[in-house]
Length: 219
Image (tube, rainbow, N blue to C red):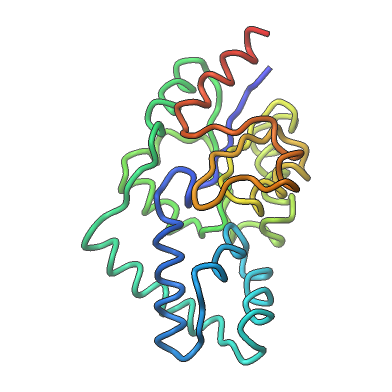
């Protein structure tokens, strides 16, 4: 029986991965490092502990991660202040369904708590979640399982009683290693052959997750 659904944020609930990709590249290139959109794909959902060495391997040991990250945040904040953030299709429908059925909802994101609160408040869904476990609240972020293990403990549930919703391979690995049921809702990339065995379903949008939960409950 499914008792909780745990959501990633960037690229899953919010159409922000495309912005992260754009502004990582703009920031790095403006500071002298030739980052490409493909380079950014590998750091989706990664905490700094893993993202920094990954980018240094790609761009050179002199890559100044804190400097480029600060510039990326500056550029992205300016864009969001002017244009806002878009919710992904089906988010409201899924959250309303969970509330109506008594299934808990939580957030597990590599983004820090302050920005998580700001973004989700801006799109009007912050108050619909029972728990928030953010990147600055665990020692080992995604793709380590810690953030999902922490989420299950805070919800008072077993991993097998929870569904994790992820859009990126690193997030899928994190949730799968923590033994949750993982549904992938692809954003920038589709599930690869090595990721498919780790997921129980692929849904093209968040509202389609309702069908999966309903079928599981009636099985």
